[in-house]
Length: 616
Image 1 (tube, rainbow, N blue to C red):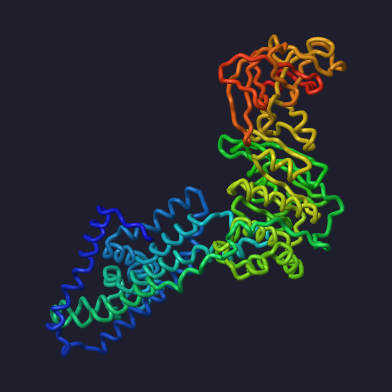
Image 2 (image 1 turned 120 degrees about the vertical axis):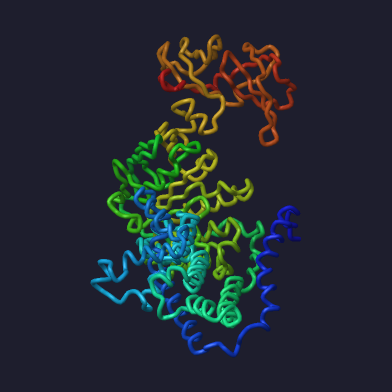
């Protein structure tokens, strides 16, 4: 059921609608007073032809120059283009007669151009020049708005799929903006067709329809002019009908939108994969300053399944864009095996890039998406269509696909080009937990099939642990820790790294005596640390099972909080300023209560660290 409009808004809408319709209604009784016999139909037809032809020529000129101009204005942040954008809109604010005077200064018989070329005024050319000047802003504004509203990620994805700037504009940017541009073009044509003020100043002859209507009105009065309204009304009605016309009804959403469409991938016996590089190691040094934020990270992992983890705003996505060549790397470089990717534009890097919403082009079907990459391998495309369960979806648009189906289409599109590097920017962030887990498992299976290096950007530690063999922890544009998954999760380098990895029962302390560590002021436990000298600053971690609540335990704590995690109750204990979590397992504790516990030395791990850095 359609939502009813708010009553005050309905009243205002009806008020304006009545006013706009009233002149048409008022003209109906006047039809009988029109002087049909006195009309010079030959001259009137000529005027209609001049207006239609000049408006069409002017619109073509406006289209050819206005669309690129709107694109440049939308994509550039330079002050010069901002000033230009202001100037090209001035004809909208000028009275038409003023526009005509300005054009006479440029093209009039006594101007520099007019004296050299001559014949620009009082000619068909003069009419086109006048109409182009006053109508162009309608298209330029529409094009600028359309390109500014379009998500630039589509052009970024097209670049990583091998398309140069011109191809990205005509095949991605322009089709997406075309509906709005088309509306602006109709407005520009109508404005040119009905232009009077500038035209009468620049080119009184040959008569355009508005000028001829004015001449008849001035010489013969309203009855003789009324028949000339018919062609104008007819053309206006035709344009309005075209604007209101919509091609067909919206296609129904695919029945495959059900959750069952996001089933795990079926692993084939003979997978098709990209040719392996001689040395698939990825090495990079990335540096970029954006306002007050600066990114400066370096990494040389030894494996092919990688993850970058960090909080929002830490530079994860920026790092991925620098690797893809979509942002300027201000220092260092990017190499994949023997290939210097940093020296190549994004379209030449032979990579696959998946942004958070997968970057599927909204105007392309699944089949068109898979054929879009430059040098796409048709055999590989057919393989991945069948392998990823996309055979029944080839004629579907992205809006008809579920999130899981979109992800698989984006994967197939990247793999049809034999990409050696796949970049995933939080591909599961918008999904619910059950679906996210299924698709994570699917991607993990895919990683085992292909030879490409994969980088997953995420803020989910579980996702990083599942999909990567090595992990890079970043915060505020800097590296906190890098290494193998097991190593980093077992021994976080700092408390901040431990927090970002989702680890609990981690802190910093000092070796108190042989086989004893002071975890917090006054809290000393036994631990296997005989190899560490007394007084050594350390990072420590307590296994959850090492903490046992018992009435006669040697350690005392205050219950800081009670939390429910995945159906199990945990108590957060405050021990000398350190916080540790313990599973209650049926034990009844209340927030603020004092309790006692023991610590199993076998569950205590410690490793050297600097108090200046680990406790920051």
